[in-house]
Length: 68
Image (tube, rainbow, N blue to C red; front, side):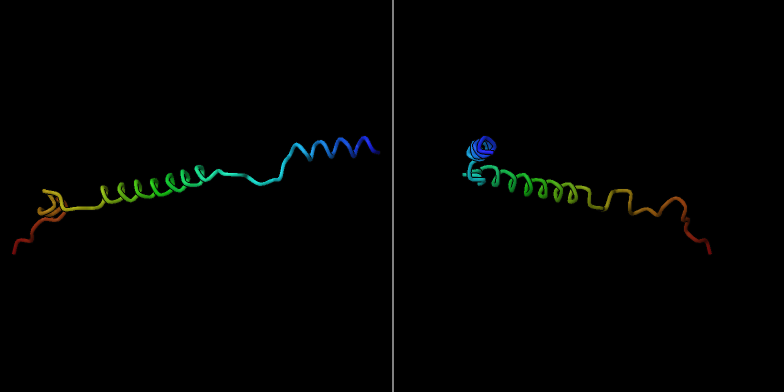
């Protein structure tokens, strides 16, 4: 029984406190990746927005002007 206690104590001593020390670089980089992705997505939506092309002034081919 004491051998099991010693092994479990040794294993728990290797685990540590269970808290990550530092690591703010990972947090800030994940924020940068998230905001950069949103910015690129917004830019792609803005570039694909419907606009007026040169040939938009003419009626579509299926609509012909009425002759009265």
